[in-house]
Image (tube, rainbow, N blue to C red; front, side):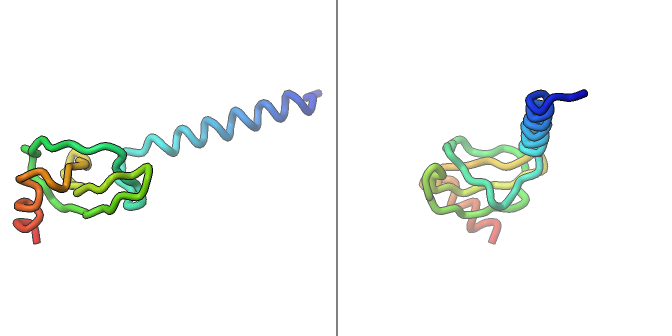
Length: 88
């Protein structure tokens, strides 16, 4: 027979594991935000971008999308707005 305490622990562990498994997705979600940015120019092909306003803990950023993933970039980096205008 399973006690209530052991059952509760098992359910709690299952919920935590399910949450962790879902948070590891490599797919970029539009609801995600940047908590840090880089000024380094991206060398791989850029296939899209998103402009994001800062709303703590998120910071203002241009998010460039590539086949390998997304890059949070500093909106005032010299090359960033040139690249955005190029992609329009």
